[in-house]
Amino acid sequence: MAFNTLLIGGRGTIGSGLRRYLPEMDERYRFCSIDLPGAPDRAEGRAEGRFIYMDITEEPDRFRDLLPGFDLVVYLARKGDLAVMNHMTDLVFESVLALDRSPMIVGSSSVHAVDDAYRFFESGTYALIAERKFDEIVDWPPPLSAHTPPCPINDYGREKAYVESWVKRASDRGCGALATRWGGVNPGNTPIMEERGYFAVWCHQRDAASMVHAAYTAHRNGSLPPARHYFVISDNTYNIFDIETPKEEIGYAPRHNAESCFHRSTDRRA
Image (cartoon, rainbow, N blue to C red; front, side):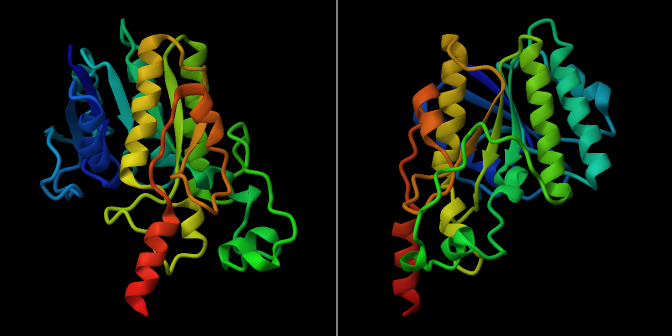
């Protein structure tokens, strides 16, 4: 039995990682990716999939006609300003929930949905973490709970919070649904040293795939908790987010640590 998977925005950084790594976890994954015409493939030929080029907001009926038969839908796409993005989110979730048999849906959120909880750019403990001044930290803060409600500080975070609200509504209507609060995922799978605090939010593409695989496996087994929003972060030494909850609840198993990549990058620059 194939796991027929629709990736909405599957040629992007996260989607290309799912196409590459999910089949290593279970060979039954089969992908169809919807992307805007001309969207570059971040997988650079390393991952397979069937591709359909369309703007789903311009062709909503065509999009709805494509949905039957999928077991898993991963919504990754972005476009336009907040109003445009929220309109597309409405379209995706309403279309999935209108099906006679709803697939599981993974809605793409971000750690930026809770930006107001850690504020790397201000003073205090989180600023010291972002600056890697670990010796100056008196009390290391507890991980931000997976149950932390959205607290965005800009429109990017607000669009992610809106996705999370739809995950809750979908779950309330009996659909398997999860919001993935992605950390710093990039095609090179190395921490971006120039970005403040990136080592604390970094996530390897394989670990991102591991979260989706764990959630879909739990869904298939009937053990996926309802309406969760999990932080999708690698097992970083200086992580500030709660990844123990998805480990315990669905068996999330990250393998990578930003520090190994960070120190290799530092050595190369020395």
